[in-house]
Image (cartoon, rainbow, N blue to C red):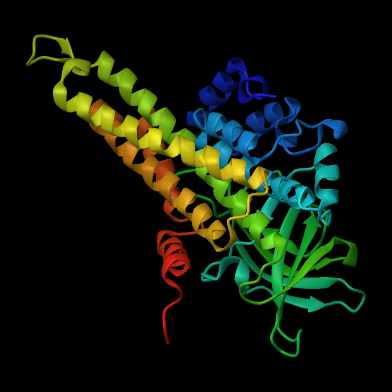
Length: 386
């Protein structure tokens, strides 16, 4: 199925019409989620044989790009569900069916969320500040604080991880598992009041000895870098789908800028459209060329994931490079769109004002600018010498 079939224009326009209200009220996108679920959108990665769309990462990324042109905050939050279902798909394509239950439960309507981010943890997936303690039956209890937990009001399954510091002879072990909405031992704080991406409602989740039974523990990995397919799958889906959202955001900003430039008139030049002003035309062209560089990169990287391409040590540089390019390009394009649109875009409630706030969130998602450049430098130059 194409993005246009999964997200028909009528649905996309309804989602676009609600975006400003969600942002203004700092409200979760309940209506969007209901309509997307009814349209089968949450089953992009679910096999067609189980009632899903049966898409790969390339097609799913294009769907998220399209959704983000209407409501970036909705698309960003939906990303977290699609990350887990995408990880299950990417692993299965490589012969690893350890997360097959994720696709099965997504087919039944469960909503997955990503509960891995932690304040002060710049190791991201390679270490954790959350404590994981064995419960003696193969399960674990988790205590810690997870931030930016998108879909907080709606998830029914939350993926979490923590560190069992005593495992592996004291070297530590990272334990991954899922809890359900009904699992006792966690709290969701009412603390999401941010500059942008407000509808995502990515509240803080406090784990207070929440227990994960053995059948929900799906990975135990050593602390630090390792070649486990799970790490690749999470990075591939997380970075690519993030890039898709910010690509769509930039695409929409360019379109709004073009529409506004055509509509604005110059008093100095006898009422002629600003679309005839050489300086405005240069800015629009600059934004368009920046976006044209981004589209093929998104398509190429995601297609390579689907094709099981072997980029070896260059895989992570490609993924973080895509994410940084998308978020930084979108920020530049929004800025250019505001410049061609004039002072009206500075007023609260204008679409470009909202996009400007939303696009700033891109700098905070992993991998951040510093981490990404370090990853790429290490791939090309080798690690720093002691």
